Amino acid sequence: MFKNLIVYRLAADWQPNVEKLEDALENERFVPCGATEALSAGWVPPRGEPGARLLEEIGDHWLLSLRMEKRVLPGSVVREKVDEMVERIELETGRRPGKKQQRDMKEQATLELLPRAFTLQSHLRVWISPKQGFLMVDAGSIGKADELITLLVKADSSINLHLLQSAESPAACMAAWLMDGVPPADFVIDRDCELKAADEMKAAVRYARHHLDTDEVKAHLTSGKMPTRLAMTWKERVSFTLTDTMQIKGIKFLDVVFDGRDKPAKDEAFDVDAALATGELAQLIPDMIEGLGGELDFIGQSAKIAAEHAPGSASSKPAASESASDATAAKSSKTASPAKDEDLAAEAAPWD
Image 1: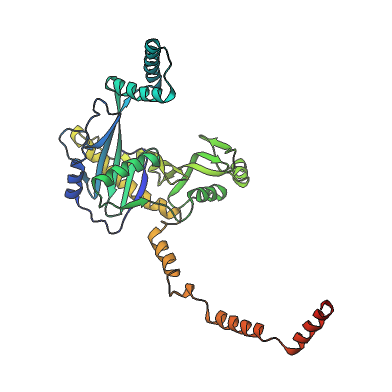
Image 2: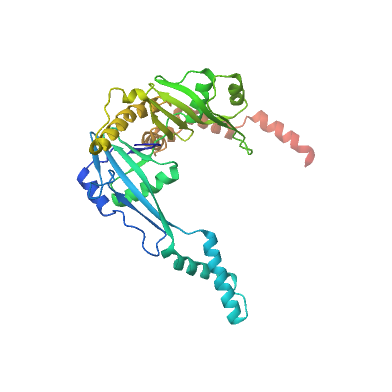
């Protein structure tokens, strides 16, 4: 069901409304690329069945699916077409087209070739947990997830969210777990890891199916390399790789999750798989956040900083003791002693 997860925090004032969101998605339903369109994206039924709902409810969880279609037009094909156009004009006019004209010809060649280009489709799943206030995207990169979020907000502008971040740096936490060998409760460290230096060279060391509780690994950490990926297992039920940007990659449900479960019928497979995946991961994600020091409260921190610097706040006013001492210092500086004035006059006399 899910291979990777990038977690977003929905705004506290967001009001979940299935009908409203489904209607909004209907307005942005997927339409295949037109003859001269390079890319098209839109929402499709998560079940993959024509005529099914664009928003599936599985227990307390909502599932969506975005389909993207792009026309694949190799650059070499475009260049070949442009070369033919350039050669033809050169033969007809006796001069070679300039750079600007060749750029225009490239655009023209692309438009002419696009209708004949074949298309590729891909899908991104979205999982919304309204009760937990999470929105998760099954994407391999934050850039891809952000593209989906842009299209989702375009469909329903009431959705307000931000990328969830932990109070402590995932890289720092992973380094600490590797150094002392003590991961968070209910998690164990597996045998895959990537360590990378922060300097210009970006030297990296990768371990695959390798014991990580070794002096060699600790030496790399001591020298300044930081974990960018670390394979872990949660409660002996789900294995995954945590990244330094708090992405959960390579999700795999272990055999114990399926123990005692009969193979579902074909028409029940989607519901069973979705219930299993959301049921397990809805528990894993909060445990993972807690292991990283909890969630970073953007709104709370912003409000605190704003309050501290607001006009009339205690921090914006000088302390009473400081004001009194400043006033005393100013008064003493204005009233010099007579003896000191005479000394200054005596020092200045030889120069008169």
